[in-house]
Length: 457
Image (cartoon, rainbow, N blue to C red; front, side, top):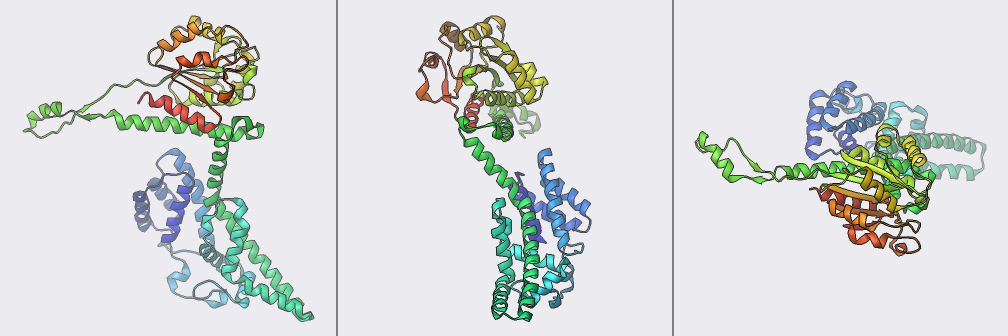
């Protein structure tokens, strides 16, 4: 069962749990102590050893039920996790097992299909191991791996005999061929069921990851309503990943360098032994972001995506003020904090959206009605296409805001080739921005927000 535990750890890693080599070794030692006899004890012991967060605990519990239920269906096990056959050292050929457990002759395959139960399940498990079914990543691979399992069992020998019996055109041969075809069908069903279980353990998270990567790399222009549920999940994970990454970087840097002078001075009372170690700590600003989101008709294709990003950031950045505008600007922080995503987006669009775009008026509203919003610690994040319906851009207000802020970052959903065309005033604002980035994909958004947080490290 050492291989079973190794495969379970592999499944956890594939599902997103960060299991280190040291933790895997600890899990093996834990299993050596508690054994496999009591499922609840085993589940709790492995959960304590392998799961570090609430999220990983959920992954562990779900996979444990899938994985060890499948294992327990194979054969009964003793306290050390060995099957009854392994414990006794017996190898009963009448149950359809060769010495190596694979490549059965036709009679044994027929007996295996007829008997079913633990012997059949054990044979299928060995065939799955031989076919490396744990490498399955997509549901579309199920038929391929089921066929590999059957080939490992020797199904081709049965198929050849079926053809020979049918070609003989005898009543007895055709009756035997039908019995073999029924046995073949049962074996195929068993193999497919086991492959499907392996997919749930090893492959589903890989499929989810792949689909999320596709969504993250797809142009916002190409996203439609059918993608929105997955986009919500991807954006939420993006925000969490950015927050975690930033917190980790700060923890690594917060301790600073060793303050040798202060440490030596403090050690004088201990005969020079440095019981108290002091570090030079560099004071860093905490992230403070003012997000200003264009929700006018000119960004109708992108607006729900931009508001999703705003919502996700609101959950992860402690000091964030959120504003939205079309013809006028409003503070939408309370809507984002007090409502779920869909109601919040609908409230914002109903309250602020629908008007003609006026960046100048939005800047005027920000400077007059929210005078305390921007200070030297603030990164101003503007989400919009920079199309202002030929209104006054109020460059003076934008320049003053840029002077007050730590930096101004502009994320534009339109490609650079369109900047400055028609009613676009983005080139006029650009000199006052630390960066202006085309956010074509979710991955572009992640990089831009990561750059913002890096400025505070």
